[in-house]
Length: 109
Image 1 (tube, rainbow, N blue to C red):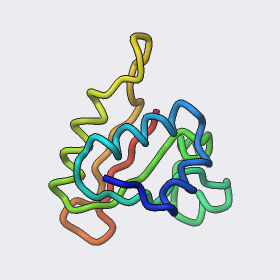
Image 2: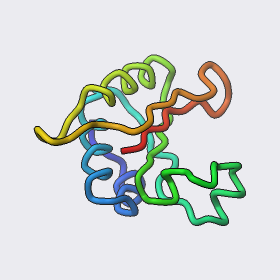
Image 3: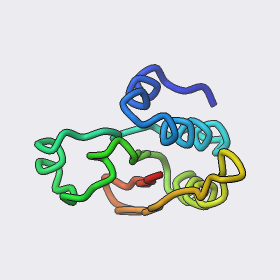
Image 4: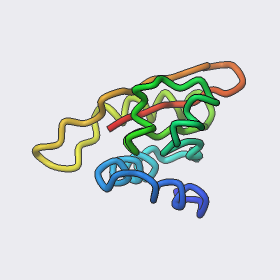
């Protein structure tokens, strides 16, 4: 699926490694997903109720929005995708608010 320009711009705020993982996930999921959150300033992180140790503060987390089926597929893929032999994959893969407003997939690499 082609990436939306706004998603590409958000991904530029991430570490090189995290950005490549997110791009790979968006490419391989085969269904539309939007990037809704990447890097957060400490202030923004507090405003959204994020953890003080959030991977978003370190440019290592991405939140994706899509329908529930796509998010569940993307979560399974996130655990499997590796960038190379030494890549250990994600630190966190969290499906949040499924079936409710604000459902999303949070992945930290």
